[in-house]
Amino acid sequence: MSQGDFKSSQAISSKDEAKILERFFTQIDGPVFCLVNLSDSVKAALFSRYSRSAKSMRRIFLDEFYESDAEAHADGGAVGSSRADRLFAKVISDYGDDSVAQLAGVHIAFEGVSNLATKVIERPRLMSYLEQSTRYLDFGRRADGSYPYMVPKELDSPIEAKYRSSMDQIFGMYEYVTSHVGEYLTSQAPGAPSREEVRAIKAAAFDAARGILPASTVSNVGVFGSPQGLESLIMHLRASELVEIRQLAELARVELEKVIPTFLTRLDQPDRGGVWVDYIAKKRSATGALVGPMKHPPRVASSMPSVSLYSFDPDGEIRVAESIIFDASNLSAIDVKAIVAEMTSDEIDELFVTYVGNRSNRRHKPGRAFESTEYSFEVVSDYGSFRDLQRHRLLTVEWQMLGTDLGYVVPESVIAAGAEENYRSAMAISAELYQDLKQVAGEQVASYAVSMAHGIRYRFRMNAREAMHINELRSQPSGHPNYRTVVQMMHDQIQKVARHNRIATSMRYVDHETEVLGRLDEERRMASKRENFGRSRLE
Image (tube, rainbow, N blue to C red):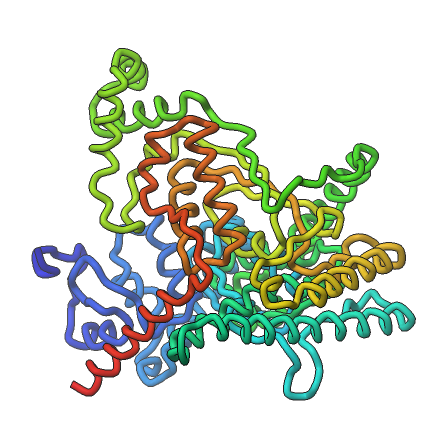
């Protein structure tokens, strides 16, 4: 089937119209096409007209957005902008049509922000994020001699001096541990290490030392999202108790107004943005006051990480079986339930095997029937692992305030390299500074001092399909050893605690092996890809 098999409902009437459309649409008469050389506002406005017009989009563009022949020589981003602005003024401001604000996309970068801020920025589900990695980059001393950490705006001179001194000590120990672990791993390699082995060793050294890095460590985050998502993000940032995060909200607003001003008109309206921010702040404060008296010294896990599958449906696999049959049949839900109730265990086994199919790699996933049962896990792990796992979107994650009460774990490679004393010294400095900041500025500000090796308690609630994705992806040998352990334990408990053997078995790409240089195979694979890419360019 080709584009020519379809006919547009509004044909192009002249060569001039065709010439105009060729600049802004990848296909001028077929049924499938992309929009190019137009601003996000214009593209969103064009899409928004679909709901109330019988015309094709290209006809709408010609009739309603392309205003003059002079625009043919203008910058593409300006074409139709005045029409789009007028449309948004009416639709968004007058009618509050949030669906229109979902039809554009914006890239925005946050640079030099603390790791505490990155978790707030990355909390909204319906956006995409990419963050500077602590696994591939050296967070030691910068070219100007300083270390990459944020100084909270809430600190006054006396405590700020101690804060800076403590941070300098912690980062100095990070450099020491990184160097010693790297030297130790190099000494364990047979012969001179290859380029791939050198990169794998460096990554393993960063992995081992990253637990020393405090939450104040600065990072860069790239965000891609709809105007609706970004509007919501700004309001959540404005409601933060931390000065840094509130300042980021205003900086983001200023920059976004340069590219999507028509989408942000409600942000500063007292009855819109103002009320929303006030609502977020007040409910958080009221909930904290109510729950505060319930707090007691935290229950410290006997080991870390710890994973507890505390809630699941014992009949979860039956629910999945019902969904498989419902989707593939013409039966009612009640009829399907009766059929599954009569099936033998072997018959249900066959149903699962058939539905999952022959998964030749971990990207091949069964369908949405696996979303019919859920698992709730409580996890206590190092903060660094939490940061990696928290970025998954299709689940519910809740986490507690970052502190130092849950202890920490020293990586085996640090002990083997003879750097344990320095590692523990960094943890002690972090814990002492945390207590000092807590007394002076409160728990929120004190969190800047907490090193990533310290424990944090959080909960995940996810369906079996998302569990498959997370467990298989995060257990790969190239992953960080700590979060690999977390997802390996999740997988074990789906099988042994929930007794969902069919679901657990379908997760065939969960890797339970222990790797010292887990990055090595990945580095070799990337080296091979680079070599092949270079060869193809020469050819």
